[in-house]
Amino acid sequence: MNQEKRVRIGRNTKAIFWLAGVVGVLGILIYFEQIAILYILSTLAMIVFLLIVAYADLEDVEMEADKSTKHVKDSSEKIDDKSKEQESANRIAVSEFNVSDRDHEM
Image 1 (cartoon, rainbow, N blue to C red):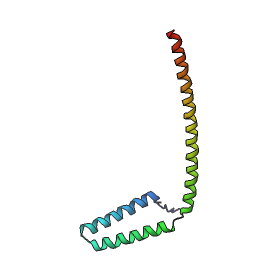
Image 2 (cartoon, one colour):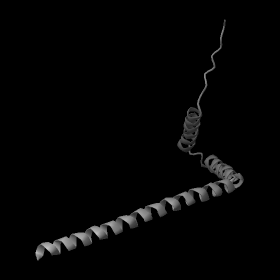
Image 3 (tube, rainbow, N blue to C red):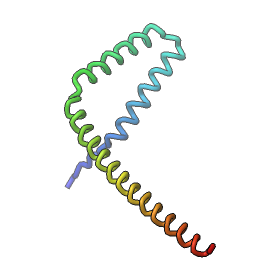
């Protein structure tokens, strides 16, 4: 009955460990003034970043953005309609108030 329990490390925990490791390595390189190594690492990091962006599927993102833009436009049209209705209701209320105010003056 020897059961092994595997400890699972979550994605956020892994990301924090990676971040701490990278910060530690960069801190040590800065402390010991290893500028050449820092330069090479930053160049490689930029290359990796640009490759990720180059191979990203941006077409789906654009289609999702169009859907959300349409939703925003529909919502703004509804808000405009409500504000126009409110403005007309306010005009009616003001005109009724002015009429009743004139009646009291006479």
